[in-house]
Length: 203
Image (cartoon, rainbow, N blue to C red; front, top):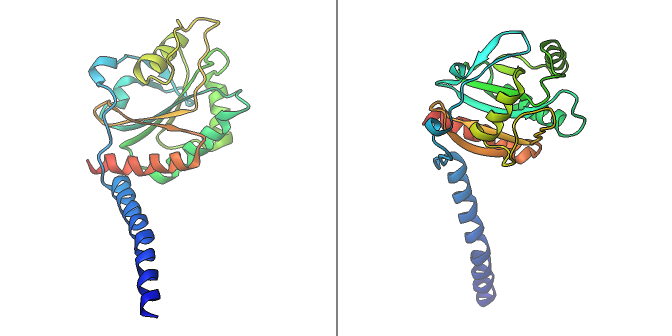
């Protein structure tokens, strides 16, 4: 009996200890491990001035000193954009009314996405608080997507035939550095983004 118990205990320990170590390491990484710095703000800073869904001008100056979550969308998108926006709504709810956290959603179809159209979209998805839906100069928006937030590696000039479509969410710290990319349609990655926002708050 003692021999059987010893074998059972040994087998259980061999199985349980690695699993326990895995969960402890995973918990530590999720809660305490510092996020990587993926770019230098000074190398990729691009000036812009665009209008949000309320007709208010928003510029690169408004990002300074804030934790910023960014995506690129368009209101007529029937596929990934509604899911992206719904998950951004979860981030908005988790952030509450914290003025140090900003969400910027840039329209990649600014010709059709007027301020009025963005206002309708904002009403439909209950976009509120510190969350801008932005429209304006297509060339600037596409330059931001490619050079500032690096969500697309293709070449393009932001002309009439240029098109970018990405499901990435980008997390930027108060120093303007990119600290993470997340698949915006993946619920688990969005949950991790919420955790990582809290990490940045504590840095």
